[in-house]
Structures are given as structure tokens and as C-alpha cells.
Image (cartoon, rainbow, N blue to C red; front, side, top):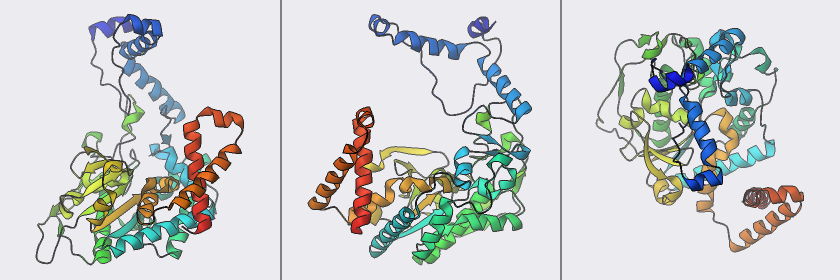
Length: 418
């Protein structure tokens, strides 16, 4: 039956949701057969073409979800009341990957130095901490994933260090905790890992006020048009509000809790108002600032860009508009110094990621190494490599050298106060 279905296609298959690349049919060639690459490629292709494959995967997933409240996807955690989480934010809330306090303080000092350097050039850098769904509603976590009281997390360490160094910051974690008690609509969707459409627009309003105060500018007005539109069905959800519900690939998808979408009007700039140029650097919470309502498109200049994970360059739009450019190929100084604002937006589980390299690279732009610095770092890196076991050294010399150089640079900079 699967073979006949694969050939005849009697039943319409909706396909599977999630991030994966369909295998193309391999070309038969003598060289590929001799090299042994054609056979496994053909096997993978044929397995993906089996009849009823999508239905059977959904059936298996549905049984696991219904009987055991378990997701077959490794990137989804099923909580109480069918609330979905991602493992990364859950682990961060539980104190996972805890950094040494001294390293956190050094990184925050580096970030504060970057803020000062940019401010001298008329550019205001604002660090924004997006909310963590696991921290926001821990009562819906599986009981074995709820951390014990007093658990120290990277968020605790960073928040204390950021406040101690007076880093310009907008922390949405306590803001969302307060809004949860006062706002009438969900700030996180049941089947999404990002802030809901309602929560994202509240966050955008707050961000604009913070930037206006920080940069002494006045943004164009945003007006609310009547009551929010409340939706109850999956096909009514927008943007990221079902971003981890779809990849469950169930026969009967998880139904959303009612969500609300604000109806907004964006005015043209009036007297004294301006649309400043900005860079938004960070993770996927940035998308909510443009997909639900056009805050980035209408409140900022047309040359405003998103540097997603400090890697790919995107233009604010109603869709994910990848320009095809890479940050590494741009003139960093020109890009930074031609802006009024830089918004560095991170979620809690990405605090370990060194701001995706942004702070290190900008700091080094304004404080370049001398030849003596580079020689000392290289000498220290070679010493680190020499102390590794032989098996470790021989695994991946390129990767080993890169990690050793990064460690040597960090140690050198902390020791020398760079």
C-alpha cells in the first residue's frame, strides 16, 4: 500500500512542518556508484517518498502526545495544559550553562565600554533583554523541570552586573511579570516560544519610549484603533504565535488559547518628530517588532536593518526579508556611526553567546591589538594547545586552534584590563 500510494497519490498529504530540507532525487552516475554516494542518497530519497509517510509520522506523534504528553521533536517540551516550551529557555531558567561570575562582570564591563565609545560618536546603544516563557509561566513547566527556589542563573548574574555598571538597559523580564497581572490578554501564546502579538506590540511601545528618552528624539505617533481583535482558531494566528505548535506534526493540532491583536495606526512624522536610523542586533524576538505591526518599518528610517545573530542582514518588512548580505562583509565603522540607535536584543538563554560576537568586534574596532598584544596571545594559545591530550590535539586542529586562541585572548584581555 505505501508503494502504491507513493506512485498513485490517492490521498492528499499536507506535508510536515518544521525546519528540514527535502532530499532531491540523486543523479545516477558510474562515479557516484563507485564512490558509494549514490546508494545512500537514493535510499534517503525513496524513504521520504513512501506513501502515507506524513500521515504515519503524525499518527506516531499523536500517540506519543496523547498518551504520554511527549513531543517527538527534540526541540519541544510539553508542559501542563498543553503549553509548549523550547528546551533552551527552560534550561536557562533552571540555571543551566552557568558562567563564572568574574567572566560575567568582565563581559558587562566590555559592553559598557562599547556603549561609551558609541555615545562619543553620537550613537546610543540600548541592551534589551527579552522575556523568557519558562520564567514567565513556570507553573506550566513539567514538574521535573521546575528549578528549586534560590537557583542562581546567568540572568541573575548579568542583571546584577549590568545594574552595577549602569549599562543602558531595558529588561522586559520584570516588565512582563508586572503586565501579566494587569493586561487582559496572553503575553505568550500556548503554542509559541516568542512573545505573543499582543505582548510584542506592548514591548515595542515601551521600547520606543525608552529610545526617545535615551536619544532625546520624538517618534511619529502610534494610535490605537478600538479594541483588540480576539481570535480562537489556529488559522487565525499570526507570525510566530504558533511557531512550535506546527512542528509537533500532530493529527489533531494543539488548540490555542484565545489571543488578541491590537489594531494600530502609524502616523506620518509631525513637527519635531523623526524616524531615526537604527540597527537591531540579536535573536528571533526581533521579528515580533515588525511582523505583528510595522514598528520597525514605520517608526525608523528606511535604511534601518536587522543583523540577525550578528550574521545575516535583513530589511524590516512584513516578511523575513534577507538581503543576502553578511555583517562580516560590511564596513563596520561606517554602519555603526551612521546610526542614531543600536538595539542589542537578547533572550535569557542567549546570554552565554557573547552577544553573538557583536561586543567583542566593536570593542576591538575602537581598541585594536598591537603587534605585541597579538604575539602574546599567540604564545599563550600555543601553550594551551600543548597542554591538551594528544587525542584532543589531533581531532580537529582548526577547531582546537580557534578555541585555544579565543581562550588565550580572553585570559590576556582580562589580565591586562583590555
